[in-house]
Length: 127
Image (cartoon, rainbow, N blue to C red; front, side, top):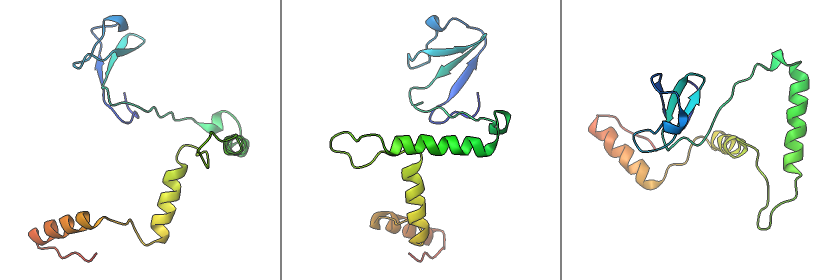
């Protein structure tokens, strides 16, 4: 199975009853039709790809997504929270910050480790 993140799936055609399926760690398996996939315990996300053009115009889709984001962002906040984030929003903000700041800020120990590795390979670093 391709396109899944955060874990690995192993195909197992010989067994089709999910109630009997366990992976090597004792985690339940997932059955899709006559094929069974064993899930590692680290899988925590699912990505879905859609052909937006097959459902209508791209402009209508983007308008709908914009409306959904507006609804999410204007939802009353839980006590102790300042903002609601939609998926990927924090990552986009961090990427923008890193690009405008000239790159990713590395902790001192990470820079020292990279410098040591570089020297061992004859590469000079300039952090």
